[in-house]
Image (cartoon, rainbow, N blue to C red):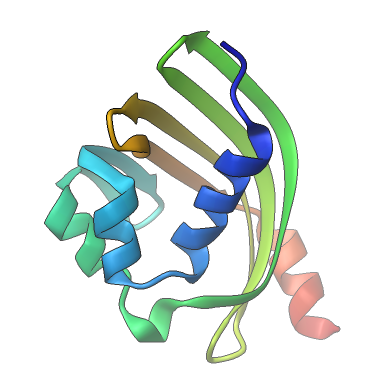
Length: 126
């Protein structure tokens, strides 16, 4: 089965712009996350709690770099993200997210971000 890339990218966009209820609805029971400041397995409630209002994003741009479907119910996508926090701080990162298909639809089960420092600095100067 071939995954609908646009559907996954739309779900992914919601993780950047949505609130804690969006996270609770679209994340799996547990999710492995890897950020510069945090690495580990978070349960659905703990992951949803990370979507606090001051940390939400705007002006999000996502450039898909790759997508693999190792099984009929698992998909991993990688993309370059550029966004601005609500406080005006620019951010750029290489992102990978894994999804698993459950009865309720695609659920995020893995997410990692590697900041791109040079692009964040360029965006700040613009």
